[in-house]
Image 1 (cartoon, helix red, strand yellow):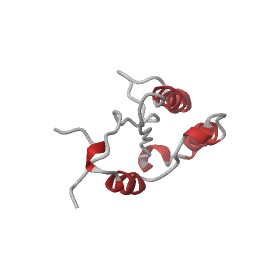
Image 2 (spheres, rainbow, N blue to C red; image 1 turned 135 degrees about the vertical axis):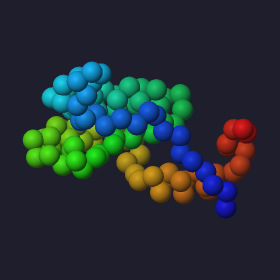
Image 3 (cartoon, helix red, strand yellow; image 1 turned 90 degrees about the horizontal axis):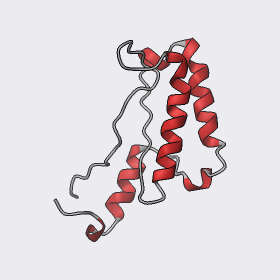
Image 4 (tube, rainbow, N blue to C red; image 1 turned 30 degrees about the vertical axis):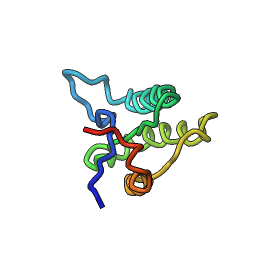
Length: 107
């Protein structure tokens, strides 16, 4: 079986503070929600993956769990959740591997 990769948007940990470039940590929930909303809008034209990086050293902090819960609650209770496939990377790979080769652009 050929090796396939799943193209992802730029991965960023939305709850990682960087004083030079990132908004304050408090905005982490809004960052995840904004990413989801925009990718859902863009997915009307093509399938997209909304990856959320969860680094235990960052998200594992108790005071940040509330923000993560709020963002995930927003996503799973979204009015258009029927357009979202909640899955794992291995399922995306399995789905793509089952598609005919003609579905993939040639390099």
